[in-house]
Length: 221
Image 1: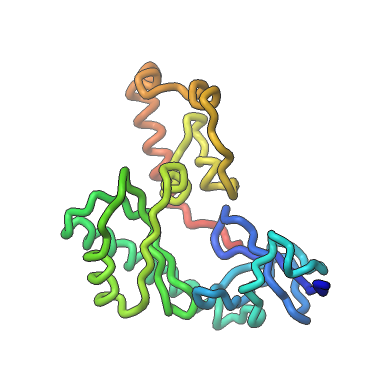
Image 2: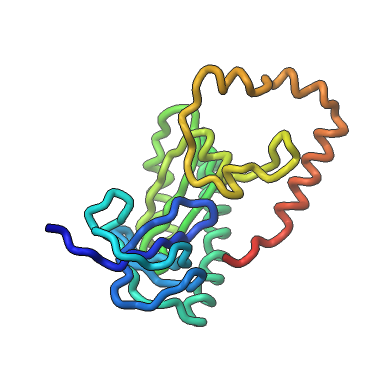
């Protein structure tokens, strides 16, 4: 018979699915920063669901992840520095992909909190032999490199942008998962040639709005 454990909901990137992990005996409240141990290394995240008693065998619970400790001021400072390093890694990955003439769009890089691994996320129309890029990045970054290919909707989620409504894409702002798209839903989306009727002025304004929004630093979780 499975026993109950204190499970807390956390995430370490905005609009990512909530991950439920074992909180042990720690007193945690919503908004607390935490250091987590996962199967791919340590992560630094924040609490979005209060601890509650659940069975570890339940499907929404990640039994391989646990809370190591509450985040400290030192952890938070290290996390901020790590985010700057991630930006440098993203530029490097894109530069290397261009040098190797790989037909792929690199949209995100993510270091684990202990910097033992970096995950490079990209989109492509088909299969890409990224082994040369894997070797180049492994040599330059001196850590384990994982390349992960995603679909078009996930590319839009990570890259961000402005929708036809003039607001930030829902998938970037708050959606945590995508539902399957049916034929009817696809037909309801205006095709590219219909978007021309809005004219160049609206297109320019939308681009400027996107640039302005991207320049605003994200709020703290």
